Length: 408
Ligand SMILES: [Zn+2]
Image (tube, rainbow, N blue to C red; front, side, top):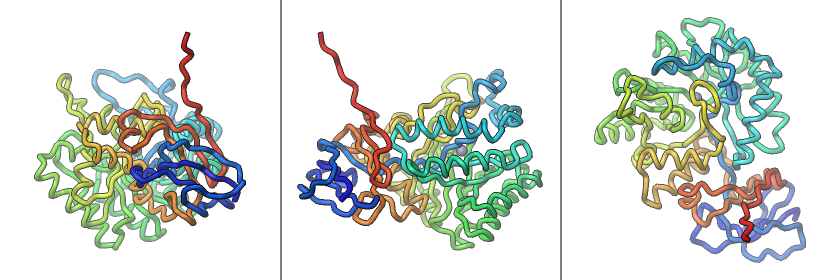
């Protein structure tokens, strides 16, 4: 063997005794206590171990631009036009440099797999795509990065965006997304995106149902098209802020509908908290979908970062554990089993959303191993305990020594 990670408390079975993880040629080859071998060792010391955090929804291409965007005025976020106003500054080198800084923070917080949502329109042409493609290749030693291309500034009214989506799909973009809120014809955009997904055989991951009231939701059409095209398990939607404005019984019925269609839901608590309720000046509504409730009614869900240091979210440290903690805080999640579910929404459930069949610490899978300074998933979420070490395919990529007190 090439490596043994000893005394690993598996996040999937934290009550069981810690085991040793044997690694050879980048894969897990043994999972048992007291593995006899003389391979190099890392002692996890009984800490929690998982296969890494799975970021299903982040925007690397427009991260770290808040210092160049025009400031907010009044209570209006106007995030899309404020980003559009600086897109001419997005050279390939500029996008690469900002995305690299954000990606490296994600790595240090334990991400091993990622889907980045990348916008295409005349403002950026394929410059962001080329930069992120290069980044994907350059950082393959640390993370599996998947690109989801989408039109942020309209599609049915934006012919160039449509041409660029087709061009990026031909060049190998793995997933197609949407943002119908910024299109005069929501249904037209959603139909076109499903048609492209069918043509290119990609999964779908849309920005959907962001807003302050339950009116005019797009989820019914998405469920309908998912069923019509037999794409259950291959469609996800992000945000769902409108679901947080529905009474529980109505929401439970919607959850069952979403679950039966096989559509997954990603909540983006930082952006949703920052962007929603802009019509109010006090008692501001939260606008964050309760993904625990959705999951309890059969929906696969993930919790993700979305935007970092831009007009959609001018804050952020790229820690997914902090996102789960924020989600639990906002949606008033207290029971241990529900906090554990929030952890699954950064790991197993996120991997399922992305159809990553080789995720998880199991014999035969890639040896992606993240050691977290906790003994249960619920503790990791409640206390935002840091990752101590990260291995990608059996090779150490991150070390974060625990903080030390220097007593007098
Ligand atoms: Zn997004």
